[in-house]
Amino acid sequence: MIGIAILTIMALCAIIVYLDASAHHIGDISEHRRNLNRSAFYWGISTLFLWPFAFPYYLRMRRKLIDAAAEHPVQEDLRALKVSIVTLVAAGFVAASVAFPS
Image (tube, rainbow, N blue to C red; front, side, top):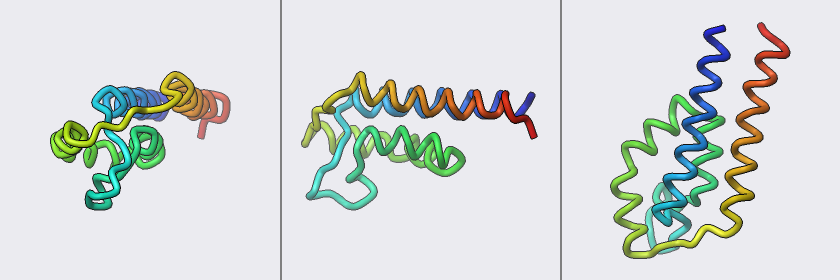
């Protein structure tokens, strides 16, 4: 039961990170350091798969990412499709944990 709750939290964090990053026009900026040069989709998926590392890192870097995006905004293409993909993958994680409990 706790595992399902943790996976649900991971899934919600991934969706929120993607929506936040795309709303602030965070994206690939070739002139910036490597850790600032990531798309909103990358941040959402990495939060889902590497939650203990990626989510705190995103929160720590968020202000720098937003500042970089203010100078070089990136328009996220197919935002609805990408949020659907992040949501479906996240829901798949939760569903798999329900169907195949450890």
